[in-house]
Image (cartoon, rainbow, N blue to C red; front, side):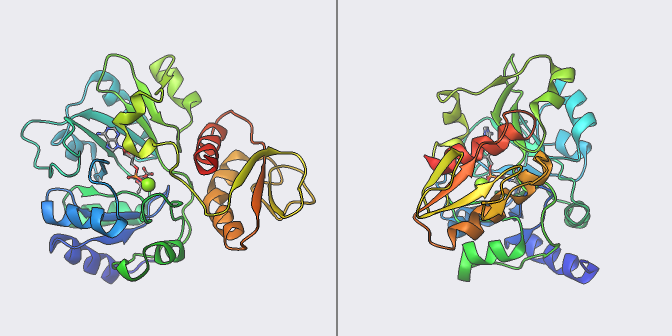
Length: 305
Ligand code: TXA
Ligand code: MG
Protein backbone atom coordinates (compact mmCIF):
# COMPACT_ATOMS: atom_id res chain seq x y z
CA UNK A 1 0.00 0.00 0.00
CA UNK A 2 1.44 3.35 -1.05
CA UNK A 3 0.28 6.40 0.89
CA UNK A 4 -0.76 9.66 -0.68
CA UNK A 5 1.97 11.38 1.35
CA UNK A 6 4.61 9.26 -0.41
CA UNK A 7 3.19 10.26 -3.79
CA UNK A 8 3.03 13.91 -2.80
CA UNK A 9 6.67 13.87 -1.65
CA UNK A 10 7.77 12.06 -4.81
CA UNK A 11 5.89 14.59 -6.88
CA UNK A 12 7.60 17.47 -5.03
CA UNK A 13 11.00 15.89 -5.71
CA UNK A 14 10.17 15.50 -9.40
CA UNK A 15 9.02 19.11 -9.71
CA UNK A 16 12.19 20.24 -7.98
CA UNK A 17 14.17 18.49 -10.73
CA UNK A 18 15.19 15.45 -8.67
CA UNK A 19 15.03 11.78 -9.70
CA UNK A 20 12.86 9.25 -7.90
CA UNK A 21 12.28 5.53 -8.32
CA UNK A 22 8.76 4.52 -9.32
CA UNK A 23 7.11 1.14 -9.76
CA UNK A 24 5.61 0.20 -13.12
CA UNK A 25 3.82 -2.99 -14.14
CA UNK A 26 6.98 -4.09 -16.02
CA UNK A 27 10.03 -3.11 -13.93
CA UNK A 28 10.95 -0.28 -11.54
CA UNK A 29 11.87 2.97 -13.33
CA UNK A 30 14.31 5.77 -12.45
CA UNK A 31 12.11 8.77 -13.20
CA UNK A 32 12.71 12.46 -13.79
CA UNK A 33 10.80 15.38 -15.32
CA UNK A 34 11.31 14.76 -19.06
CA UNK A 35 11.15 18.50 -19.80
CA UNK A 36 14.03 19.38 -17.43
CA UNK A 37 17.55 18.94 -18.91
CA UNK A 38 19.26 18.94 -15.55
CA UNK A 39 16.86 16.34 -14.10
CA UNK A 40 17.23 14.06 -17.13
CA UNK A 41 21.01 14.38 -16.99
CA UNK A 42 20.90 12.98 -13.46
CA UNK A 43 19.24 9.80 -14.71
CA UNK A 44 22.24 9.14 -16.95
CA UNK A 45 24.65 9.93 -14.11
CA UNK A 46 22.93 7.69 -11.53
CA UNK A 47 22.63 4.75 -13.95
CA UNK A 48 26.09 5.36 -15.47
CA UNK A 49 24.25 5.12 -18.78
CA UNK A 50 25.84 6.31 -22.04
CA UNK A 51 24.08 9.51 -23.12
CA UNK A 52 23.57 8.17 -26.64
CA UNK A 53 21.01 5.69 -25.27
CA UNK A 54 17.58 7.39 -25.33
CA UNK A 55 14.90 7.08 -22.62
CA UNK A 56 11.22 6.09 -22.60
CA UNK A 57 8.74 8.87 -21.78
CA UNK A 58 5.81 7.98 -19.50
CA UNK A 59 2.55 9.94 -19.59
CA UNK A 60 -0.85 9.69 -17.88
CA UNK A 61 -3.14 10.06 -20.90
CA UNK A 62 -3.22 9.80 -24.70
CA UNK A 63 -3.96 13.53 -24.79
CA UNK A 64 -0.69 14.19 -22.96
CA UNK A 65 1.12 11.94 -25.46
CA UNK A 66 -0.37 13.92 -28.37
CA UNK A 67 1.35 17.09 -27.12
CA UNK A 68 4.76 15.39 -27.44
CA UNK A 69 4.68 13.08 -30.48
CA UNK A 70 2.95 12.87 -33.83
CA UNK A 71 0.34 10.11 -33.92
CA UNK A 72 -0.72 8.27 -37.08
CA UNK A 73 -3.80 6.02 -37.53
CA UNK A 74 -1.92 2.86 -36.51
CA UNK A 75 -0.50 4.52 -33.40
CA UNK A 76 -4.02 5.71 -32.52
CA UNK A 77 -5.42 2.23 -32.83
CA UNK A 78 -2.64 0.59 -30.81
CA UNK A 79 -2.66 3.24 -28.08
CA UNK A 80 -6.43 2.91 -27.64
CA UNK A 81 -6.11 -0.86 -27.49
CA UNK A 82 -3.00 -1.42 -25.37
CA UNK A 83 -2.59 1.68 -23.17
CA UNK A 84 -2.21 1.73 -20.28
CA UNK A 85 0.13 -1.24 -20.63
CA UNK A 86 3.59 -2.57 -21.53
CA UNK A 87 3.70 -1.30 -25.13
CA UNK A 88 6.12 1.53 -25.97
CA UNK A 89 5.55 3.32 -29.28
CA UNK A 90 8.38 5.11 -31.12
CA UNK A 91 6.88 8.10 -32.95
CA UNK A 92 8.17 11.32 -34.52
CA UNK A 93 8.83 14.02 -31.95
CA UNK A 94 6.70 17.15 -32.43
CA UNK A 95 8.83 20.17 -33.29
CA UNK A 96 7.26 22.18 -30.45
CA UNK A 97 7.57 19.35 -27.93
CA UNK A 98 8.89 20.61 -24.57
CA UNK A 99 10.95 17.43 -24.01
CA UNK A 100 14.63 17.69 -23.15
CA UNK A 101 16.91 16.73 -26.07
CA UNK A 102 18.70 14.37 -23.71
CA UNK A 103 15.58 12.17 -23.55
CA UNK A 104 15.81 11.21 -27.23
CA UNK A 105 19.61 11.38 -27.29
CA UNK A 106 19.34 13.67 -30.29
CA UNK A 107 17.04 11.34 -32.33
CA UNK A 108 13.97 12.88 -33.99
CA UNK A 109 11.73 10.20 -32.49
CA UNK A 110 10.44 9.60 -28.95
CA UNK A 111 9.65 6.29 -27.25
CA UNK A 112 6.47 6.75 -25.22
CA UNK A 113 3.95 4.76 -23.17
CA UNK A 114 1.22 4.95 -20.52
CA UNK A 115 2.20 2.54 -17.75
CA UNK A 116 -0.56 0.36 -16.27
CA UNK A 117 0.54 0.51 -12.62
CA UNK A 118 -2.11 2.38 -10.57
CA UNK A 119 0.54 4.04 -8.37
CA UNK A 120 2.50 5.32 -11.37
CA UNK A 121 -0.63 6.61 -13.04
CA UNK A 122 -1.63 8.49 -9.92
CA UNK A 123 1.88 9.92 -9.62
CA UNK A 124 1.80 11.05 -13.28
CA UNK A 125 -1.55 12.76 -12.65
CA UNK A 126 -0.23 14.55 -9.56
CA UNK A 127 3.03 15.68 -11.20
CA UNK A 128 1.30 16.75 -14.40
CA UNK A 129 4.52 16.34 -16.41
CA UNK A 130 5.87 13.63 -18.72
CA UNK A 131 8.40 11.46 -16.89
CA UNK A 132 11.48 10.00 -18.55
CA UNK A 133 12.26 6.65 -16.94
CA UNK A 134 14.66 3.88 -17.85
CA UNK A 135 14.81 0.76 -15.72
CA UNK A 136 16.16 1.69 -12.26
CA UNK A 137 19.35 -0.37 -12.41
CA UNK A 138 22.97 0.42 -13.11
CA UNK A 139 23.63 0.24 -16.87
CA UNK A 140 24.27 -3.29 -18.22
CA UNK A 141 22.75 -5.10 -15.25
CA UNK A 142 19.41 -6.85 -14.75
CA UNK A 143 16.29 -4.70 -14.51
CA UNK A 144 14.83 -4.43 -10.99
CA UNK A 145 11.45 -6.02 -10.30
CA UNK A 146 11.24 -4.97 -6.63
CA UNK A 147 12.47 -2.05 -4.50
CA UNK A 148 15.23 -4.15 -2.92
CA UNK A 149 16.72 -4.92 -6.37
CA UNK A 150 16.87 -1.17 -7.03
CA UNK A 151 18.79 -0.48 -3.81
CA UNK A 152 21.19 -3.34 -4.48
CA UNK A 153 21.87 -2.10 -7.99
CA UNK A 154 22.07 1.68 -7.44
CA UNK A 155 23.55 1.57 -3.93
CA UNK A 156 24.31 4.98 -2.40
CA UNK A 157 23.07 6.70 -5.54
CA UNK A 158 19.51 5.42 -4.94
CA UNK A 159 17.05 8.33 -4.73
CA UNK A 160 13.62 8.28 -3.01
CA UNK A 161 11.92 4.94 -3.85
CA UNK A 162 8.16 4.42 -4.05
CA UNK A 163 7.91 0.80 -2.93
CA UNK A 164 4.76 -0.86 -4.28
CA UNK A 165 5.90 -4.48 -4.05
CA UNK A 166 6.96 -6.78 -6.90
CA UNK A 167 6.18 -5.90 -10.54
CA UNK A 168 3.36 -7.97 -12.05
CA UNK A 169 4.80 -8.34 -15.58
CA UNK A 170 8.48 -8.50 -14.62
CA UNK A 171 9.91 -7.96 -18.10
CA UNK A 172 10.29 -4.60 -19.90
CA UNK A 173 7.76 -3.20 -22.35
CA UNK A 174 7.60 -4.20 -26.01
CA UNK A 175 9.10 -1.38 -28.11
CA UNK A 176 7.36 -0.88 -31.45
CA UNK A 177 8.81 1.62 -33.93
CA UNK A 178 5.99 3.27 -35.90
CA UNK A 179 8.09 6.10 -37.29
CA UNK A 180 8.61 4.32 -40.64
CA UNK A 181 6.27 2.81 -43.22
CA UNK A 182 6.69 -0.69 -41.75
CA UNK A 183 6.11 -1.27 -38.03
CA UNK A 184 9.18 -2.77 -36.41
CA UNK A 185 9.56 -4.47 -33.03
CA UNK A 186 12.79 -3.03 -31.60
CA UNK A 187 12.50 -5.02 -28.38
CA UNK A 188 10.18 -7.95 -27.61
CA UNK A 189 8.55 -7.42 -24.21
CA UNK A 190 5.41 -7.46 -22.10
CA UNK A 191 2.95 -7.34 -25.03
CA UNK A 192 3.32 -10.47 -27.17
CA UNK A 193 3.70 -10.11 -30.97
CA UNK A 194 0.68 -12.43 -31.29
CA UNK A 195 -1.46 -9.68 -29.73
CA UNK A 196 -0.13 -7.01 -32.11
CA UNK A 197 -0.62 -8.98 -35.32
CA UNK A 198 -4.47 -8.85 -35.41
CA UNK A 199 -4.29 -5.03 -35.33
CA UNK A 200 -1.12 -4.49 -37.35
CA UNK A 201 -0.76 -7.39 -39.72
CA UNK A 202 2.61 -9.14 -39.82
CA UNK A 203 5.29 -7.32 -37.81
CA UNK A 204 9.01 -7.48 -38.32
CA UNK A 205 11.64 -7.74 -35.63
CA UNK A 206 14.50 -5.28 -35.90
CA UNK A 207 17.67 -6.82 -37.25
CA UNK A 208 20.98 -6.16 -35.55
CA UNK A 209 21.67 -3.21 -37.90
CA UNK A 210 18.36 -1.61 -36.97
CA UNK A 211 19.14 -2.12 -33.33
CA UNK A 212 21.70 0.66 -33.48
CA UNK A 213 18.57 2.82 -33.31
CA UNK A 214 17.77 1.32 -29.93
CA UNK A 215 21.24 1.35 -28.41
CA UNK A 216 19.87 -0.37 -25.31
CA UNK A 217 19.52 -3.40 -27.50
CA UNK A 218 23.27 -3.90 -27.71
CA UNK A 219 23.90 -7.62 -27.53
CA UNK A 220 25.10 -7.90 -23.99
CA UNK A 221 22.76 -5.92 -21.82
CA UNK A 222 20.62 -7.77 -19.31
CA UNK A 223 23.48 -9.55 -17.67
CA UNK A 224 24.17 -11.36 -14.42
CA UNK A 225 27.83 -11.88 -13.38
CA UNK A 226 27.68 -15.68 -13.59
CA UNK A 227 27.95 -17.18 -17.10
CA UNK A 228 24.76 -18.73 -18.45
CA UNK A 229 24.27 -21.93 -20.44
CA UNK A 230 20.98 -21.90 -22.35
CA UNK A 231 18.68 -24.73 -23.46
CA UNK A 232 20.14 -27.00 -20.80
CA UNK A 233 18.62 -30.44 -20.37
CA UNK A 234 20.72 -31.70 -17.43
CA UNK A 235 22.61 -29.95 -14.68
CA UNK A 236 26.42 -30.31 -14.97
CA UNK A 237 28.95 -30.21 -12.10
CA UNK A 238 29.42 -26.68 -10.73
CA UNK A 239 26.14 -25.47 -12.20
CA UNK A 240 22.95 -24.16 -10.68
CA UNK A 241 19.86 -24.89 -12.71
CA UNK A 242 16.99 -22.56 -13.59
CA UNK A 243 14.11 -24.79 -14.58
CA UNK A 244 10.95 -24.41 -16.62
CA UNK A 245 8.17 -26.97 -16.46
CA UNK A 246 8.65 -30.31 -14.69
CA UNK A 247 12.23 -30.20 -13.44
CA UNK A 248 12.72 -31.77 -10.01
CA UNK A 249 16.51 -31.19 -10.07
CA UNK A 250 16.36 -27.45 -10.76
CA UNK A 251 17.48 -25.01 -8.04
CA UNK A 252 14.77 -22.52 -8.94
CA UNK A 253 11.91 -22.92 -11.38
CA UNK A 254 10.53 -20.11 -13.57
CA UNK A 255 7.19 -21.88 -13.81
CA UNK A 256 6.64 -25.54 -12.90
CA UNK A 257 3.32 -25.40 -14.83
CA UNK A 258 4.95 -23.86 -17.96
CA UNK A 259 3.02 -20.61 -17.56
CA UNK A 260 4.93 -17.95 -19.55
CA UNK A 261 3.45 -14.96 -17.66
CA UNK A 262 4.63 -16.48 -14.41
CA UNK A 263 8.04 -17.19 -15.95
CA UNK A 264 8.42 -13.58 -17.15
CA UNK A 265 7.47 -12.24 -13.72
CA UNK A 266 10.06 -14.52 -12.07
CA UNK A 267 12.89 -14.20 -14.62
CA UNK A 268 15.01 -11.29 -13.32
CA UNK A 269 14.45 -12.09 -9.64
CA UNK A 270 15.51 -15.71 -10.07
CA UNK A 271 18.53 -14.80 -12.20
CA UNK A 272 19.63 -12.38 -9.47
CA UNK A 273 19.07 -14.98 -6.80
CA UNK A 274 21.13 -17.64 -8.59
CA UNK A 275 23.78 -15.07 -9.54
CA UNK A 276 24.26 -14.25 -5.84
CA UNK A 277 25.15 -17.87 -5.05
CA UNK A 278 28.44 -17.53 -6.99
CA UNK A 279 28.23 -20.79 -8.91
CA UNK A 280 30.51 -21.59 -11.86
CA UNK A 281 27.60 -21.34 -14.26
CA UNK A 282 23.81 -21.09 -14.40
CA UNK A 283 22.12 -23.64 -16.66
CA UNK A 284 18.74 -22.51 -17.99
CA UNK A 285 16.24 -24.96 -19.44
CA UNK A 286 14.67 -24.12 -22.79
CA UNK A 287 11.66 -21.81 -22.97
CA UNK A 288 9.23 -22.05 -25.92
CA UNK A 289 9.50 -19.24 -28.52
CA UNK A 290 5.83 -18.27 -28.38
CA UNK A 291 4.00 -15.43 -26.63
CA UNK A 292 6.05 -13.94 -23.78
CA UNK A 293 8.62 -16.69 -24.43
CA UNK A 294 10.04 -14.49 -27.22
CA UNK A 295 10.85 -11.68 -24.76
CA UNK A 296 12.16 -14.15 -22.16
CA UNK A 297 14.48 -15.79 -24.71
CA UNK A 298 15.64 -12.37 -25.91
CA UNK A 299 16.72 -11.40 -22.37
CA UNK A 300 18.33 -14.80 -21.76
CA UNK A 301 20.30 -14.63 -25.00
CA UNK A 302 21.59 -11.14 -24.17
CA UNK A 303 22.49 -12.28 -20.67
CA UNK A 304 24.40 -15.24 -22.10
CA UNK A 305 26.37 -13.25 -24.70
O1 TXA B 1 9.10 -1.44 -19.35
C1 TXA B 1 9.87 -0.54 -19.69
O2 TXA B 1 9.98 -0.18 -20.86
C2 TXA B 1 10.71 0.10 -18.57
C3 TXA B 1 9.75 0.85 -17.63
C4 TXA B 1 10.50 1.62 -16.57
O3 TXA B 1 8.91 1.68 -18.37
N1 TXA B 1 11.68 1.00 -19.13
C5 TXA B 1 12.78 0.56 -19.79
O4 TXA B 1 13.63 1.59 -20.17
O5 TXA B 1 13.01 -0.61 -20.02
P1 TXA B 1 15.14 1.34 -20.65
O6 TXA B 1 15.76 2.68 -20.76
O7 TXA B 1 15.80 0.38 -19.77
O8 TXA B 1 14.97 0.80 -22.10
C6 TXA B 1 14.49 1.68 -23.09
C7 TXA B 1 14.90 1.22 -24.45
C8 TXA B 1 16.38 1.37 -24.71
O9 TXA B 1 16.83 0.19 -25.34
C9 TXA B 1 16.45 2.56 -25.66
O10 TXA B 1 17.54 2.47 -26.52
C10 TXA B 1 15.14 2.46 -26.39
O11 TXA B 1 14.24 2.06 -25.40
N2 TXA B 1 14.66 3.74 -26.93
C11 TXA B 1 14.34 4.85 -26.24
N3 TXA B 1 14.00 5.85 -27.07
C12 TXA B 1 14.09 5.36 -28.31
C13 TXA B 1 13.85 5.91 -29.62
N4 TXA B 1 13.47 7.16 -29.81
N5 TXA B 1 14.06 5.09 -30.67
C14 TXA B 1 14.44 3.81 -30.50
N6 TXA B 1 14.68 3.24 -29.29
C15 TXA B 1 14.51 4.00 -28.22
MG1 MG C 1 17.07 -0.92 -18.99
